[in-house]
Amino acid sequence: MKNFILLALVLTFVGASCSKDSLVPDNTQLVHVDNITTYNQEIAAGVSVVFFHATWCTKCASQRPALENMVGKSDFSSVFFGQVDYEKNTNIVNQSDVFSFPTILIYKDGVEKARYEGTGHSQATLEAKVKELL
Image (cartoon, rainbow, N blue to C red; front, side, top):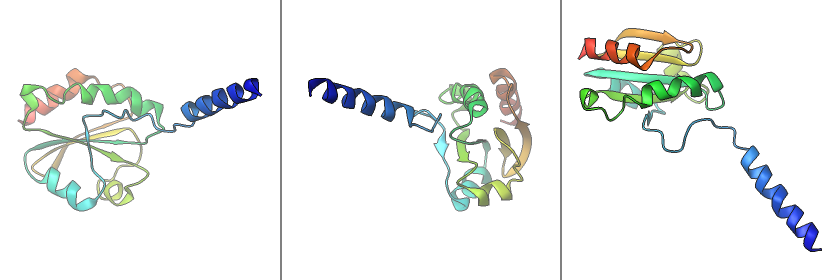
């Protein structure tokens, strides 16, 4: 009986840890944007960086640190850093003409100034573009 209980506990623990389908860290510093009104308000003025991703996407997870490492830097204190779940926010995706993930859009006063699709976009590249727009 003791072995059965131990086995049940182990299986419960393993099952719970394996069932997590999200690669988005719990402590992300990117603001979750989940409605079109908020999205339009956030990109309307100033410089905004928006990360379109899927929670299960490993390529998105590999691109994420380049953005998250920018958040909190004094050079970018006026920049809005947001994220949009590609699969849950199709109205935002369609309005922004995003066709794949990961995609990073950089806006200045509501106008798209840069688009980075796929992976491999370095933090230095993204920082340079944002600084250019500030």
